[in-house]
Image 1 (cartoon, rainbow, N blue to C red):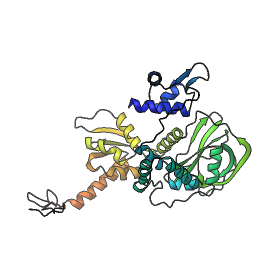
Image 2: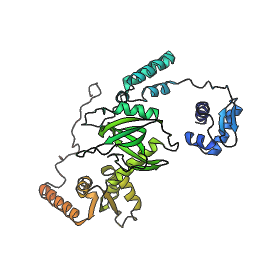
Image 3: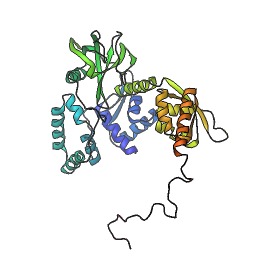
Image 4: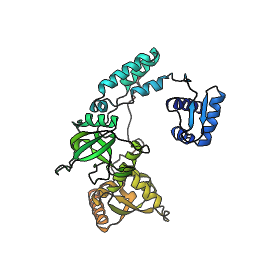
Length: 369
């Protein structure tokens, strides 16, 4: 494991010289002390890592030195062929560039690695859109992608369903996110009030304004501004921003609460039937189980209607205590089920006998003796 980390460190310093120990540690997932020890190990192995002190300093490889650790193994070559979604690249107007890149990569690989990489395409297919949704690329997406790549500010108008488009606003496009087949633009607005996207939408304060999310298919007007590239906030990380906004959006949907008493099995299954994050928060905040082993907790839910549908899946492992209307609804359901199954014989409809399933066919291909 350390050998692989040392190789990654050497390649990292070759591609991004001047990183501090803290920055290298974040990239590799280790502490600063470990980085220092690894640098010493590389130096002892003959890799000329130079440490420059002071402002603007950091680790770098000696001038003119390049590692020879760039040979790919089969797993890495396969991963490169799976690193892009064909549909997403086509939507962004990058399918031709991606095809050319794959051809160049194939030409540089050893024949054995080339076969391994190409075989991955036959074995794996990445399908981003959600079920029951016909994927369609927003008309303005390629132009948005060009602005994102070139750091060019745009002026856009945005319209929510059933509303007229809002006024045009200046947005600095930081990135594009594909979520379940829907494209979102993440951009910084210079303090202007305005729209946020639906899912994953929201704001986060940046150095020059608020970051907002827009559904790309709801952008009705788009114009690249002629004032040249904008200065990106170096602290902004698209993946981290999106994860935070996605969690915030999911939490904003949970506007109601129910009190429920769960058996140990019900507590175990609760994250499987309702919002996982909400279930985990409720279980963590719950008091110790009572004398019967049941735990009582407050669960955030989207609505009583959805809570009824979700908690019904737990059956007798969950008892809703509040609100009263929801408890009464579960009581009516229980009485209806009791009336429906009240005449069933004890033990249900399972046949009696030592082998209720009966003889099973042998599917191994050879006759049973």
